[in-house]
Length: 277
Length: 162
Image (cartoon, rainbow over all chains, first blue to last red; front, side):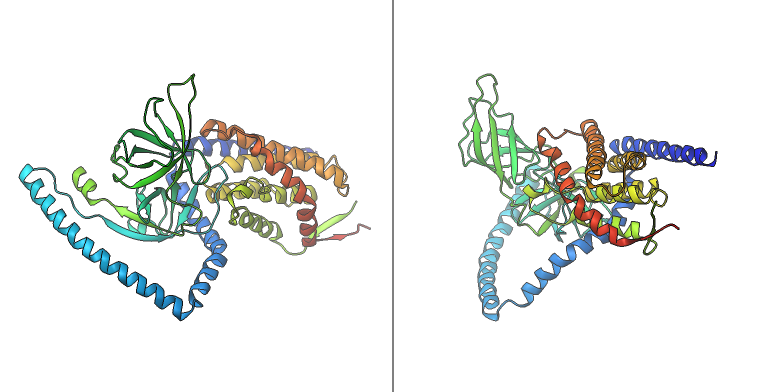
């Protein structure tokens, strides 16, 4: 009798846990329980830091033991670059001021400079079906959901979840990610969709008659107002005509090399938020 | 029948933690499709040898943590692990604990069902994976099972019943 009782409670346990899981899945699918998600993200963050630790340490050690000569060479090179860039920045400032004056004349909304923050990517893998990474900056640093992440001068992805000290960034190549783009040469528009393959996106809605060459650069179009316009996204790698379809299948390699990137730049687009307010 | 006792309390939680860490250690993208289901293997091991000590709570919490680590829909792996635990406990009564071939059969059924449940949830919540590479972990998990089982065997001692 005792044994039967215990097996019955076990079955009851099983059913209640199955029920709890199903409830959680349906709630999370509708983004109804962000608090649970954030709590779990906070819980697992130390584990991710722990896994990242060996990579981080080797990186720091390698940097510590680089030779003086190499460092001074690099320093020299960077100093030269800064000189060039500051000259260019001066030119940019005068153009920006001119633009501001024109905008005042036309009585349109003013544009402001964007703010940036550098974040480090933890060397931790996600599911094989998701292309997401964890970074070491979170809502305490004013990171918000839907924020754009850049890698140098190209687009990396966008923030999808935030916790106080960490957040999760979806890469361009994630199957759930789409970004409006345009051909830098012909200005024809398209959508760059992730397919779950590393460094690969598909360019959708390109008609068979459209002029697309292998090696064409696609930049963000700025449509949809989420991404800043004119940042490099992908370079066309392959195209296939299908006689039965009016659209061409175009595969492109992302400009950002997701394998190499260890740091990314978070951007606060002041002009956009100012425009919305 | 032999009785087993754990070398220290918390051995189950510790081994699950190590399995979780192994699930997110960085490996090249192509190899990721061959990553064995470490947490599932550890859960099967404890369900066979310690059906009383290992509970649904272990499976559920490990699943939730894996969901958070992998960025999956919350509850996806939790559901898979709870069902896996159920099957493992039910089947462990029907096998001889020391025969490797029977182990392989059990691991195949358990992880196969777990992956099937996962595939079902993935199909509902997002585009489900189209190719056969989804099932690679089943094969790699079977391959590493003797290793996992052998290592985890060091965490308990057998005391012969009188």
